Image (cartoon, rainbow, N blue to C red; front, top):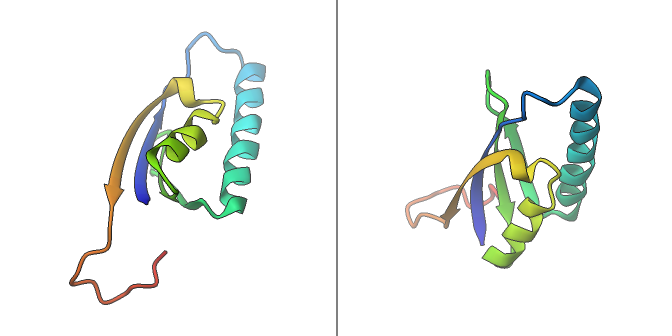
Length: 96
C-alpha cells in the first residue's frame, strides 16, 4: 500500500536549544533507518515551512502507524495521510 504523508512539525516554544538538537538528531536517525528498509521511499522538505511530504510503501495501515509513531517528533506533528494507487491512464509505471 502506498501512502503520501504530509507532516507539519510544531515544536513547543518552551524547548531550549539542547532539547531541540537532541530531538532533531533522534528524528534523523529514525527516519533514515526507515528509509534504509525501503519502506520510506521519498522524503521532501516543504520550502519555507518545518514540514515534509513523504511517500511510504508499506504492507498495511498498521505498519504505517508503527513507522510514523516511532518518530521522536510524532507527538508534535500534524499529519495528513492519503492512500494512493496507480492511475489506469499513467504511462510511467516505474516511479516506485
